[in-house]
Length: 378
Image 1 (cartoon, one colour):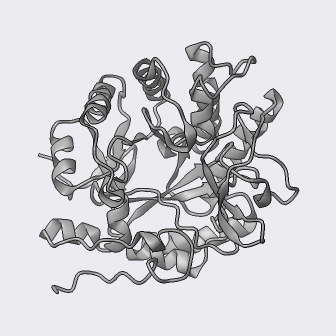
Image 2 (cartoon, rainbow, N blue to C red):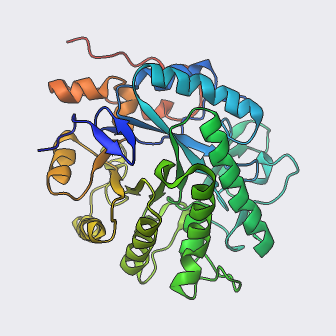
């Protein structure tokens, strides 16, 4: 019977165990290049079978947050090489998460002060970017009003992802995860209440709604090979002013089936029905959890040979149950990895888990980034 600590073959990439470190923005790269601190942070956590990097922008336009390491310049490639080399020396594997935030950005982040771009010009009211405030200091600020990408610009964005995937392999990553979740650019094209386009990417039809995502996946697969490609999705997710829409189950079941036809390595789901419940004190909604769980259980019939990863509020018991029930193949742990760099050994031995300090999640120095110790029996 498979368990959390047994090896797993991820489309030809052998993982030492099934535990995945989920992508988490930490905003510590002051020059937007992965540095020695970045390498140490990930190396401390390299007992994970698979590490998925924090979102790494594929272009300057793709950025929505300061101090995030990119993947679009030679310096970015060199910076990430020190990370992947160290990870591989510890026996772990690592995928780079390729990221374009779309409308969730601010003019202060752009060198030319340009507006963010999105599937449409609908502003993400209430969404925060991490840019420069009126006094010039870094701060969480309201996302600027975007402009809609022109049709020919969409092709350029697709090329940015394809080139980013090629750069990631040159940087030593074992593969790439396309960020299609959490209200960012790909999610904006999928959602018919945000995508108001009238071109070939129009959301009035299911094919139009999914075309940008699938064209982008095809371009990345052509560049680095299907066995090196995963994607993250978040059905029922509502971050950054993303509204729910009719037909979510059909949309994502159709998308999963199309991805399976392409034979990519995995699809990675984010469960927003439970997201953040352990840290923000928000009560869980049983109806929302049941709705998400029902959709998750339906994906196996559409997923073919693709592995299924699930993240959010993951525990050892929940992960073990989901694997035994064949709902997922790999559980992804996010916040537990922040305060527990030795999470795998703690889970294996049944040791208690430390709690992270939310005040040090984003930005700052070493505190809350490199300073959590391994379990010492105390």
